[in-house]
Image (cartoon, rainbow, N blue to C red):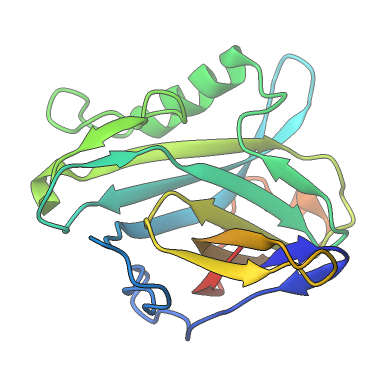
Length: 207
């Protein structure tokens, strides 16, 4: 989905049923097209004990099964039903990132399992194969208590592109294959402390 001259353009494919991203639909021939598999975790709330500020955070696993090493440089954007779009990591203090990583890592055996990486640590080559799966966490400040629906857009999972014509200028606009994850909230974020919001649906769009 993309807003071009006030017009939203989106092309979607049916949602996944197993919690793992299915292959996107081919739309534009690419010399060597590829995609990475994303398995999102639940969306949860963290409260900073220092100032009471609340944050959304989501863990995920990404696997490269393309047969070649690829670069994993994702962009996660969160959109509320009020229309506001936030990019993960912005206005998130380093201490909050560290606290959330520590909370996630405590129940795990850190000597035997890979760490959960923040959005900067996760960037880089990812080798092909399930054994090279990478786990990450993305974080956003909670700015509005009144929202009931949240959507997360993930780019960087595929090199597929689609070129469309701008409806006003006629110029070519390149859209990227993007994963869309949709969540529903109870509206009162105070009720979410310690609870998980699971993905209601997910699909591919161009945006």
